[in-house]
Length: 219
Image (cartoon, rainbow, N blue to C red; front, side):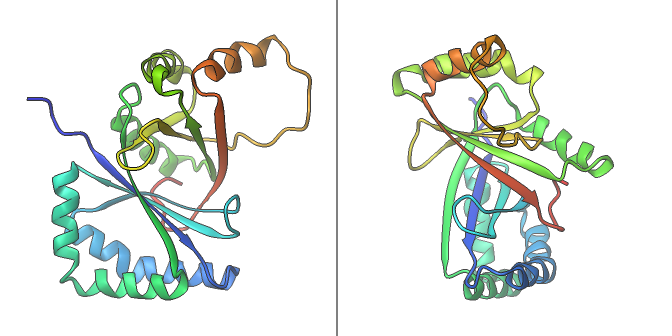
């Protein structure tokens, strides 16, 4: 029997008010309630970031579970855990608008690569990561997976995650670097060699610049 894939829960919090002082309060809540509850209940926070692309100072948590059954077990246990409930209540007070997405790894980039990135960043912090969120043409998901497999080893992509619910043809790549937003330059051979094949299978892409929170395992 094939092993069940790991599950990643991506939680996005739109702060209200979206001020640095509110973001500081999130740090306090995470350290006091969220992280202790996670450790007891088997949830592994792998990344905590803030970004400005959707909403200013949006907080994003990426949490890992062994499989979907482990996530269900966590949810049941969290319902009666004091720290978990207090963390949820206080985060909801700061961010009434939230979004939860459930993701799973896309074959070529194994979870072990993300685990190694956490270890590496504890020695040398990256500081700024990037989400590359790609809309893959439905008929070309296998071609995209093959393209990712050929390219991933040479690129700082530490996770490739596919929606479990929602859009099954959306893939979120996590880059361990700030990809930046360079100004206009004409297309050249180097750009074409990368984007030409990619855009044939994933014509649309959204980039999110991710600054690490102080309690993030990915540093």
